Length: 460
Ligand code: SF4
Image (cartoon, rainbow, N blue to C red; front, side, top):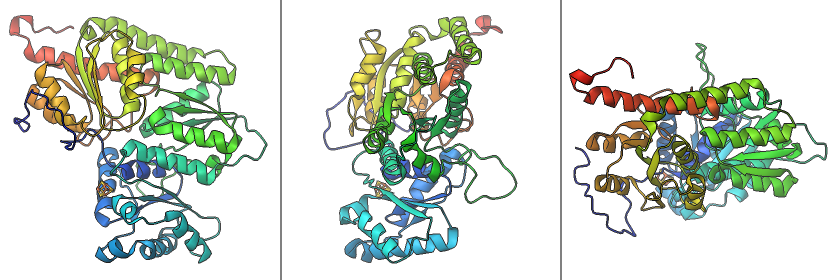
């Protein structure tokens, strides 16, 4: 009972967060930068920040995550980090030869007020940026936002630094995938190609954070969107931005900079959100949906129909990132489940409205909480007050699941005590089948565990 002091009485809080349902902005900026080919992320702050960001990504992806740091000391904290950053740029190009250095700021450098645009300009003037190489940046103070807004800021930075309109349109569609796993980015590419679309996906962490074992250490794995590909996003026919919190800002920046028309969709997680994604691709390609995709949908519907009795009216608590939660809540309602508590620490507009749009009036008792005080402590209190049949969220949910003896499905970021999330997609119809299978498995394991011997069934 690690959380035994949690009470069921919810007290309104305004200045205290207990076990936040989010993490730090620079982690998202670092993850987005890893989706660029030959890119070295750089943390402009103290070594401790960088170690935390790298280790969180390494633990989630089970891959070594490389990044530089400006290694702030007491002196830097007083006089600013310009000298350290200029030295770091020189060292990183000399030692690690990246195509791109993607700088993100931290709480400390933002509080000091370091002007990264000016420092990058100075580095260029002083010849510290070799020809054909790039230094870009995003501002990611972690006392605002979350890892998702950090991701969004860096993706917007990619557009601001690289996207160009030459006037010669390319027969391709930009897909800004949102914060999803490398496996999801690969799946989005597969689905798009199956639909006859040439996708320009950025960032793209597939083959970076799920690169195959070859026996050789590759400092820069083969994956990632190249600078050229991101540059060409300005000549694409249109953009599909998946997940408003993570992707809308970049899509709007691209629209403004290069007049590439964009459409913002919810992440294609679950049956209906995937239907909308496929429909959007179909309109862009002007094609009929191929049999391959229709069959995948049919298998998902068949699985749901076969197993419906296990899903029916189950009460679920969810926590995590807004874009995932909206699509997940919709999918649960599709399965006839009842998402009753939905909690995110990530701030942002329209979260509650989006949830209510997708679940309609099917779960009138739903409680939706967002922001600094929407934390794991509050979620635990809600569950203590009135229990649920299932908890879905990242690894940190395991403490609540254990204390309250609730079946638990790991989903979201970070997952640091299991594998699979980076290899098997959650998007598309196949991803929805995997999610449904995970939910079913925990329900059936629970049924087996609780069944008295006379009703311990071989067949479900
Ligand atoms: S919250 Fe701020 S100080 Fe803490 S690790 Fe993140 S950037 Fe660094």
